[in-house]
Length: 144
Image (cartoon, rainbow, N blue to C red; front, side, top):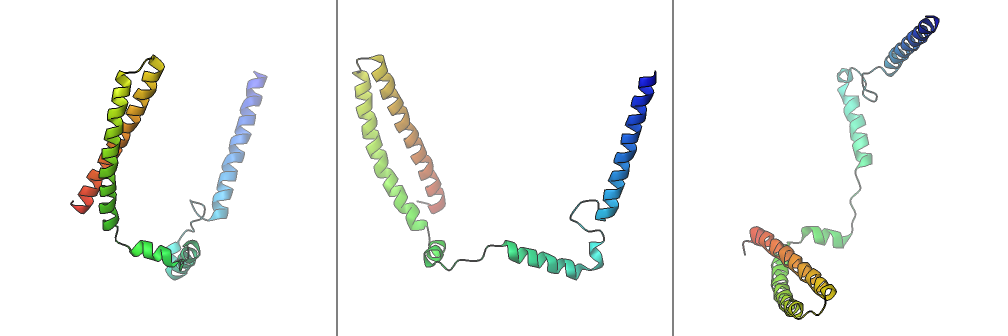
């Protein structure tokens, strides 16, 4: 019975100390959320000035690199059309390679060789799928 009362007394002291610390920190920071002052609306101009100064210091300064400016101002329509033409040539080459791999797979002498060829075929099919998705996107954007 004596130990229960001692444990209860220790818990009570800890509870009182934590509540006192909480209220002390609340009165010290003068806000519910640290970093936000209460009654900010009393003087909005100083708050706006503080915000403007923080914003100016946090934004990166523009670079005067002519290549970056040219890249930003460039129309990417021609690049997309050119990429689509390049993709069509790549599709033809990949399809030829797929046909070669298919014939090699039919003539494979061992299971390991067949597995390697099948992996290569799957890689080529994945490339074709990605190229087709890119082409669909380019067609959506450019209308060609």
